[in-house]
Length: 184
Image 1 (cartoon, rainbow, N blue to C red):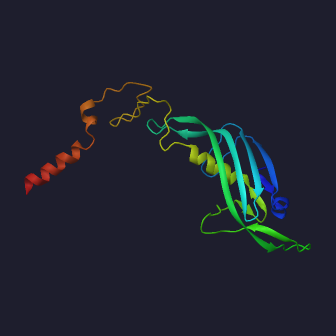
Image 2: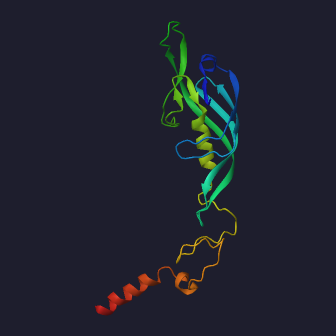
Image 3: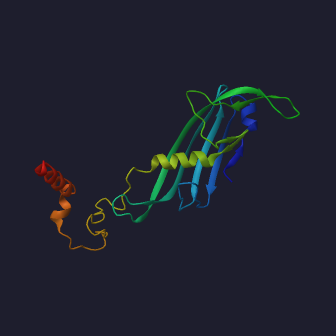
C-alpha cells in the first residue's frame, strides 16, 4: 500500500531510490481523498540524513468556508523532507551497522512516519494535502454564503430577510451596551 521498506537505502550511503504511488481514493483521519492519489517520491541516503523529495496529485473533499456546501478541491502538493540518521546495530542476526531515523531538535519526525525502517508515505501525503488546502476554501470565487438571519444558502435562493438587520452584526450588542449605560 503506502508503506515501503527503506532498509537497503539506509544501508548504503549515497543510494537513491524512486517510489511511485498510485492509490485509489481513501479517507484517513481528517482528509477524504475523492480521486486517485498519484505521487512520486525520491529517497536519498545522504549519510547523515535521509532526504525525501516528491509530489502528489489528487482531489480532496472540503466544505465551502462561506456556504458550507460540499466541494472537491484539487491538490498538487510538493514534499521536501530531511530526517537525521544515526548508526545503530541491527537487532537481527547479521549485526550490520544500519542507520536509523532519529528525532532531533531541527527536524521532528511525524508520528507514524517510520516503523523501524519501514516508511509510511501516507503520512507525507496527508501533510502535503493539508498544506495545499486553503484556510477558507470557496466553492466559487463569488460565493454569497449563508444568510446570517435565516441561514439559507444565498447561492441557491434569494432570501427576503431585512438586509439592514444583517449589515451590522454587532448592532444588538451596541443596543445592550447603550441600555446598560443609560441605567447608570
